Image (cartoon, rainbow, N blue to C red):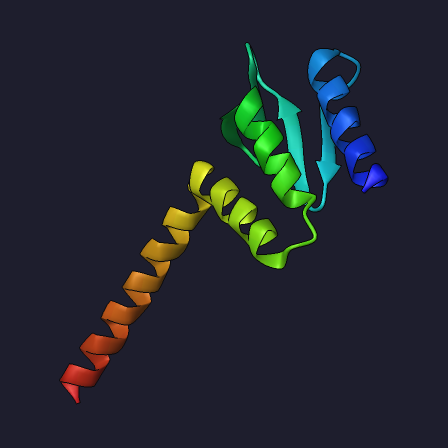
Length: 100
C-alpha cells in the first residue's frame, strides 16, 4: 500500500512541476498538455481526470485497469476506430453469406 501511495505522490509532484514533459506508466504515455491538462496516449484529460486514470491503472484489480484503458481508448478515438473496423468486417461477412 505504501508503494502505491508513493507512486501517486510522485505523479502529483510531476503534475505540479515542469521537470519532465512525458513518462510511460504501464504501457501508457502521460504528457503535459498546454494549460491545465494531461495527454494520455494522445487523448486529452483534465488533471483531476488524469489522477483518477493513474489511480485506476495502478490498481491491483484487473477490471479497474481494463476500465482505465477503455477510457483512454475512448478519449483518443481508438475505440471508435475498432468499432468501425469491426462493423465493416461484419457487413462484409453478411454480404458474403447473402451472396451464396
